[in-house]
Image 1 (cartoon, one colour):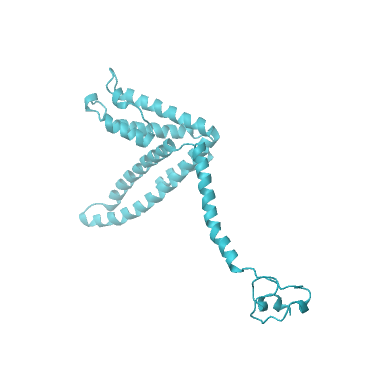
Image 2: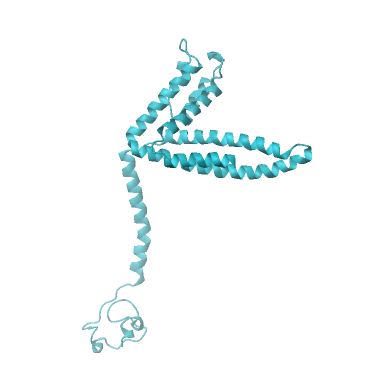
Length: 252
């Protein structure tokens, strides 16, 4: 219940917020904190850093192509300097996106990504908790308290959910971009061609359903005397291509 309250409280806050820039920036900075701690452990020396791993992670999670390997070689650069430079680079990138999309559109994109990701992560979490309940039940036979086991692991799973939420939202926002004019034109052509392909079989079917026949000379649909003497299964003298019994023969 406590986890549900946290998630639904966050969701309500996002839905009611007019400006989500601060929320997504805090998420992004926490992702950077985690990346820097993973690849450049605190109190470690620069020669112990995995700068190649950090570069790859920054590209994947933040869409940042920044020279972290060269930064690490500079005199006086430490863990905090590397983190702050990634903050600055990511903030600049996202500010550029907001300008390209327009502030209002960017806020809508942020809200959509946040709500979709929260809902998706929460559904996955509920399924995982259900599985955990069944697994923990067996641990009672091993002289372990199932309730304590469940609470401990459920808490860790919830922490993982929040970490995943921050990471996924940050990555999605880093990768989104407006379509270029060329991409818009290509998409329009693709949609036009697809619609034409869908319409073609319909048009050919309609054309094949009722091939026109020559109209009987002197035919007057208001004067049955001009219709000749067609059999019920003969083509209608009006030239419709249908059998007489299904066309003007109904009126005869």
